Image: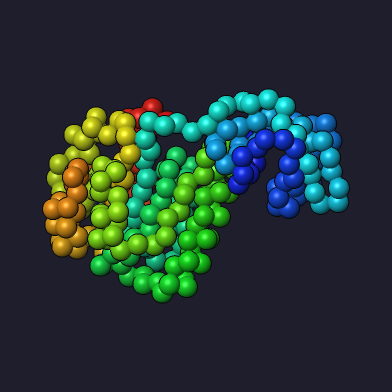
Amino acid sequence: MRKIFTDFPICGTFELSADDAHHVVVVLRHTVGDTINVTDSTGATYECFITGMEGHSAFLTPARKVSSGLPTSGAVSIAAGLLKNDKFDWMVQKAAELGAASIIPVQMEHCVVKLDNARQQARQQRWQRLALEAAKQCGRDDISHIEAVTDFQSLIDTYGSSARFVIPYEKETAPLADVCKEVRTGDVIICIGPEGGFADAEIDYAKKHLPWCRTVSLGPRILRAETASLAALSIIMYERGFK
Ligand code: SAH
């Protein structure tokens, strides 16, 4: 079932957004008296009655709380170099399905794509919309948060103290399997290079400045960046019981 999200906490009768109202009324053909599950901005999910419809609006009233919110035992996120064409779009959609908490687009040295400020913001909004759609489609209780495009050093400086970094690196031979047990809980960032791979200086910077970082191999084959992101995310989510 497709999910409905609100960007406010539910605490009484509320009106659906025009987009969601259209989906509920026109696509799913729900009517007054039907119930649907809605997840609010705190991550809590309520079973709600449709208590009113007016033109293109729908009003919902919560009947009971189905679940109370987001897990607090840490989350897995992806920081990835910007990619050409629609490859980053594809990665965002699939990573959202697999449960990435957030996705951080990174302008790295070997990125073929270079986005100016206006295009960075437009892409961020587009990726956030894709993440929302993916969450609705797969029934997630939360939505992958798309961060603003950042550069590699800021990524390390901003998140190094709060998350552990697993860096699939094409020149590494130590297998991901060796570090899986260490990232079963807590906040973890999987950091993936762009099509051109990591610059040596980026790996040096990460190793020097991160309190916890492991460069790992995903095997003898060089994977496309988007394949590498999803392979590493799938393996680590599996280790964490897909929570
Ligand atoms: N152009 C580079 C490959 C870049 S692949 C070269 O030919 O060497 C893009 C990114 O995917 C890499 O930076 C890395 O983060 C990840 N990746 C791809 N294959 C990998 C592998 N076998 N092991 C670890 N990381 C890999």
